[in-house]
Length: 482
Image (tube, rainbow, N blue to C red; front, side, top):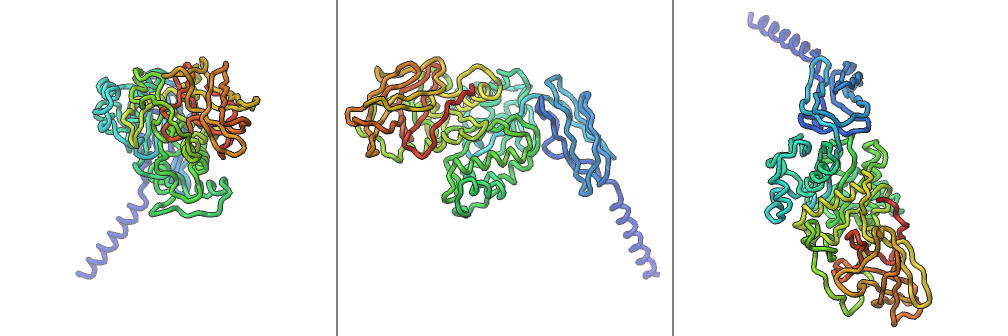
């Protein structure tokens, strides 16, 4: 009898197991979606998740309705037709069951990534940044939503646990555009760029650099941070990316930051499948230059103006800064000038950095008539014993600040030895000459990590960018973006 009972119990367990395995799987939606989220306006919006293979899935939002069938692996995706800004709505995903998300907004969505200057929390910086503290104190912001693992409304508690830089970018952007803004952050302190692109993207970096295969230096695993923080976000519809990283380099010998960032930018764009979305990045090194106006809330923490040193700069002094400026040559990529925002490995002025990034976004992405750069080297011509330098992004005109004459220009002849030059503004150009260089060949400006003595600006209040005509960095063409 005991044997028969055991057999019967075993058969019952088999039947129950079979019934459980045959039960329909619940329709699930990827964790990127939740209450209080923001969906990107004006482009198709992917919604995705899992269900039983071949199960029919329906997604509805406002007057939009899309149906699909889960594939053999149980994966499904629909793309809602482009949405417009409007009242908060409800998004419903249904199959054998229904999943509903409330308080869903449509507006602008930005991803923030990089290392510690992006990862650093608002709560940690607000005590040293009065402007940031005031922004937090004015919370909540009903039209601003924050994502760091889940979507939250931007009240003081959520803001204090969120990226100080990305919040300082998103809050004025929302205010200026007057549409909802969603901010997604994935950043880790002390990390090189090589960890933020997949192995396939890394291989492309080496091909672009025409370099033999290289292995990362130290305990670095290519692609681990991309897999952990960026890949889960893809292909959530976004407007663009704000990137702050560079102090930790690439961690790959012989692959420089320009090459690695080019592969990262291309790789992320290919993964998202949205074309060449805007990619903004913060200038490195942080600070190092004087500001047009230290009374301005954005630039109030800038380094003080200084007299020009007696000795000219070393050839290597400006290479790091020039290499990071060069990244803007990648398509639809713009640099957030930071030389006049305050120095330090972790600059305190997160509100100023964020507002400057907002300014760049408004000019590059949203068509506002605002200058996004200071004077940017375009070309030069030798005129006898002098060199005439032509600039783009002169804005309202070139200007000198803090002194009666221009500082920061150097010249060299065929021997390649640079000497300080006397320089003056002539319309939209600068004419430079040096008594020690009778036959000039090259000219450079602000050629140092720290150049508080360089004082060329445009009248829009933005500092001229470092350049050298003898540097391996290719010359910039006139950039017409505003």
